[in-house]
Image (cartoon, rainbow, N blue to C red; front, side, top):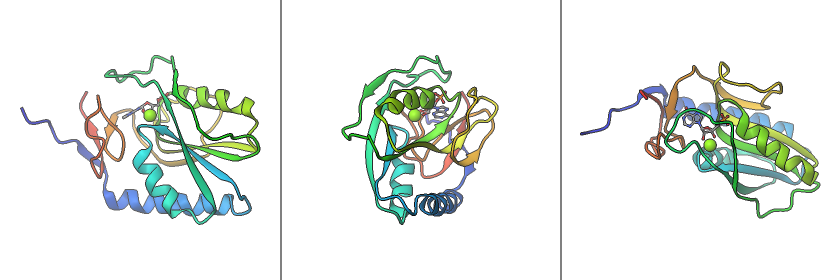
Length: 175
Ligand code: IMP
Ligand code: MG
């Protein structure tokens, strides 16, 4: 059986343009910062972070952190677990957490709580996609690429049970 092609939500060109806009905005916001650290949440972040980080015009370094995922389910359990920590000391650094998508916000909340006690100079969040209907937190994401409806999306790093991650566009799958 051949898998169904996801329906296109954002084309490669739309993604490219929006990532460039985000990079300009972040570069301007961090213009006076000498030690911006981009913290990518594995694995979903890897393509967005690769594109975004190369377009920034400020000095930056990159590290990764991994948290437990939903596995094959598409609903958040709210239970997040750290499975790989940073290699970098973040005390005194300007940290920007980067993820592919925010759904309920539990993952980002968990990471903010885990990283804040390490005393970064600042701690902000950046995601390419957000599902506003599903977001449960009482704080806001600092940088958002696009708001999307409550659907399961894949491509550009996002997977469904580990498939479709390397699709060049963002598409909606039926679940
Ligand atoms: P949250 O903790 O509920 O905000 O979930 C965030 C994580 O769930 C993201 O980092 C993704 O790994 C995953 N996720 C949520 N929605 C989607 C989706 O539509 N497609 C792929 N992954 C998703
Ligand atoms: Mg993720």
